[in-house]
Amino acid sequence: MVQWIRAKYERNEFEFIEKQEPYSAGYRDGFLWKRGRDNGQFLSRKFILSEREGALKYFNKQDARDPKALMKIETLNATFQPAKIGNPCGLQITYLKDNSTRNIFVYHSDAKEMVDWFNAIRAARFHYLQVAFPGASDEELVPKLTRNFMKEGFMEKTGPKHTEGFKKRWFTMDDRRLMYFKDPLDAYARGEVFIGSKENSYTVLSGLPSSTQGHHWNHGITIVTPDRKFLFACETEAEQRDWIAAFQRVINRPMRPQEYAVEAHFKHKP
Image (cartoon, rainbow, N blue to C red):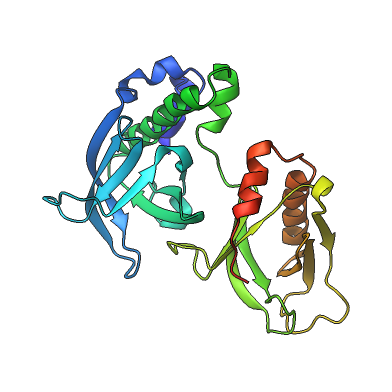
């Protein structure tokens, strides 16, 4: 995506916050093509990003007074996903709603317009973090503005009793949240799993318990948590290796104080 590369490498907009000034006015509005949650159609929707309101919102109708969704800047994330969305300017926006992740998929025909929206979200996040963490330096805050997913791809999973047949699901690992979807473009995950640290009894193991049945793919992974074991199967050994490495990176990292609160309130569907 040429405009994104220019913004990052030629204009250094991601490294030097002051170079994002055109996007940093605290307000942005415009129309983006948004994927419908149920029918999968992309329709033009009005979006407003307002730092004063602390939110990004969109409207289903042009003259609507109330937004269809209000996404707090506090939990907002954006990442370019051209292959998944099927558009070179595709952007995936995520936020938390009732402690569950909600996905919104958008694009614009003008690449620079899409990059400007991405940078506006980053600028709003930067200003939010400056207030939330007043003692932190810019260098500490910049990596927290937006993040790419640690890993995505298909795996098979079974239920909590480990006797159900394995089902193929799309998995997204967003830091300590492992989410699974029936389709990569679903608005909501079928379930979410919190991945803590080894100090808190979280472990990743290669393979599945010997009694496990019902999986079509042969390269198993077992995630051990304080509450239960989660069983997954990968299609290839390379995928298994990549997933285990991603899990291990998170498990090896000590949990921050705020992550204990996330763990305590975490909800997942078995």
